[in-house]
Image 1 (cartoon, protein in one colour):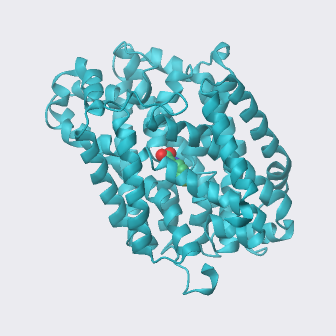
Image 2 (cartoon, rainbow, N blue to C red):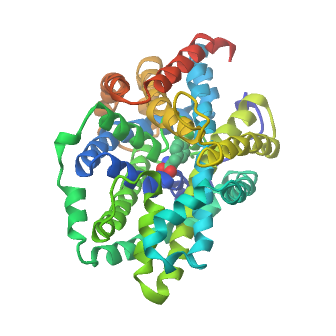
Amino acid sequence: MGRERAQRESWGTRFGFLMAAAGSAVGLGNIWRFPYLTGENGGSAFIIIYLICIAIVGLSIMIAEFAVGRRTSLSAVGAYKSQNRSWTFAGVLGVISGFFIMGFYPVVGGWSLAYMLKSVTGLLALPEATADVFGAFISAPIEPLIWTIIFMALNIAIVAKGVAGGIEKASKVLMPTLFVLLIIIIFEGVSLSGSGAGLTYLFKPDWSQVTGETVLAALGQSFFTLSLGMGCMLTYGSYLSKKENIPVSALAIVVMDTAVAIMSGLAIFPALFAFGMEPATGPGLVFVVVPAIFAQMGNVGPVISLLFFAALTVAALTSSMSLLEVVVAYLIDEKEMDRKHATYLSSLVITIMCVFSSLSMGQMSGIKLFGVGFFDFFDILTDKIFLAIGGMLLTIFVGWFMKKEDLKNELTNDGTVAFGFFEVWYNLVKYVIPVVIAVVAVMGIAAVEQRNLMLFGLFMIILLGVFSKKL
Ligand code: PFF
């Protein structure tokens, strides 16, 4: 196992770690997915449930992942295995989740890259047609594929360089740009006439729309957006220095991530209502509404649009790098591969999956797995099942299979820093969160349309569990 080998890589600086972890958290989940889920789930009530999930479940699990990662100095699979072989499957489930998310995430990253170019080549000339342009673009066979491949190439170049040189360096420069751009867009959107309805939509809850499915969507999104439930933060924690204050870092990351999601909502909904568009447009939302806002800006529109999609691409990249890293770290730690080979091999498989996902938007839209296309298959399976169950397994593992003393030492750096909420955190992780996730999962699966797909996901997890010791 990795521990006996050459010294483990680690983060260069504290700021670098924070930016990389925040870079992993802040991504398409915040800017692309959060707004469209909010739109599909009726607005404010969804946001409130999401915020509760983040505060209670998300923050606690992030602290737990960092603690396990740093304690064991191993990535997901090794960390579980080193404590108890019957738990290997929980780590493997994480690696599979990483793979599956990478089965569609780079496709959206590719759309974002493409929109950088489109911003300055006429996209904004026809603001009424942004929806048609988007629809035509993603359903074309070749163009989106080329962009996906370019996006993957960027990932490979960075991850192959390792932790401090690649991932950390890129995140430090690119993340802050995003904040600034979002603020500009919010001001533009809110100043449009008719934007007030968007603010009402975001902040005045209508509870009549809430079902088990809404709650599962909010819970799944809180895992997705914080990069939890698949060993990503665990792996990042394994590169963390013993001096770092884990609870404080986790809180900072959660706050940043939530801020970006809410800012994205503010950037999109006021403008959407001002333009009289539909909130429930689905995955195209950001690609349709945001260009329409920029089109109103006159000459500077294309430049701001270019910058926005550049920042979105960067946010996507810092997240997809972390997803790829989970798979790569597994191959390095468990299969003894070197970093370069591990990166190339996993990227090749991922790119093939992405080809199917991209084509499922057009050419291959007729091919269904459990009633959905490839893109939705990877998306729904991870977001609605694997991450939440992965998170649940982690809390059970931490609460019931690790020593409380060890956890306390890890979270207080052997008593040198204070963590006043330790008992609260411990009881949440041990008793409350596993039950909450189980209840939400059952309610959600009962309400959800793609029930067979969900049951297939559960079956896969059980199968992994049965064969855990062989993994
Ligand atoms: N948190 C990322 C986002 O919001 O886009 C997506 C993600 C990255 C999910 C890493 C899971 C993960 F391990």
